[in-house]
Length: 394
Image (cartoon, rainbow, N blue to C red; front, side, top):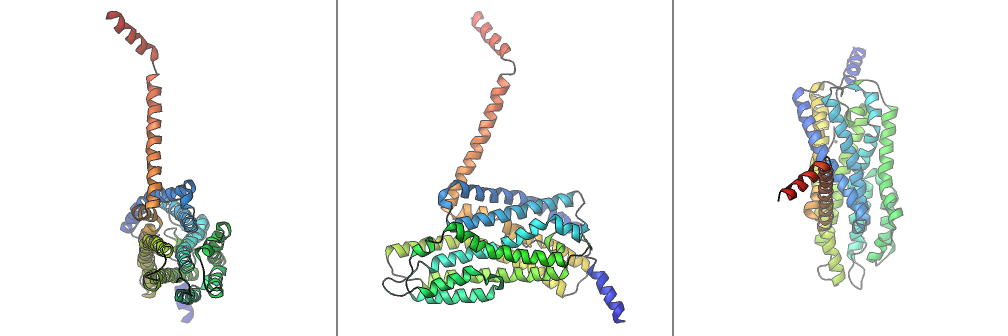
């Protein structure tokens, strides 16, 4: 009897169910819509960072890395849309895994990068803010928060958290220069490295446990084998919650612990950090709501033991809130929204984006002028003859 049950369970685990037609239509529209607008936005973020030196700060470079990850996530989502439109989305898991392997890698890096940007802001706030002429109580509290974050985010036991704690505990007074003295060429790789390691670990787990069962739609939750999908899903939720904790800690530092009366330079730094954190918080709220919602949908549907077709629908719908946030996809919105939030909330990015849009308009007008000039030269003899004739008649 137990053997028969085991056989049935194995057969069901190899069948991922079928996705309904309505679900597929909604996903197709969402993929195309968010894919086009999101790719445009993320390309402009990278271009603005390249063109404008003022945007190439440490935080700006991390946001450009995040935009790079989002750009490729959306590019693969458009590929998924094409597969759905030509009815070639169903394939074996092995074929699916290898066809979107770069997406699987970069998507996990993208999830980590949202946390990394928040951690960078926490570092930038903890290092410069101090009370004048005495040791700041903010330092010790910040150090404790960083230690808690290091414990919670298990794959970030790496060097940047430990280095931050050492910096906070080895120095009674810290100036803004200490954060600024981190060289971008070493700081950015150091911050990004844990995300790369985390993504590689999940990729290796997927390769080791890979099977050849059929999947109805090729997306990250279905590309991973069963156990790896659970690890991926839970790790995403942990990262999501930890990211929110980081931003909550940052808000606490800025609005509750930061000095109310300090030097003009310190207060100016606090105001700048508040503006940056308020802008990034909009992105994090979208990421949290969409990513957590997507992950919870998958977890709840699996935990309830519903029919595999219902689970397949749920895992496919999960792409929409995710694309809505920056995962099937925890967030089309997540991948797409950053450019428009920066345009709305950041005056520095807005100026850069307006210049780029103006450049696109001028480039288009230049192209139209070139076409007009070309058309006027199609038959110059006739125009010249007509002009001479009119002068003769006069």
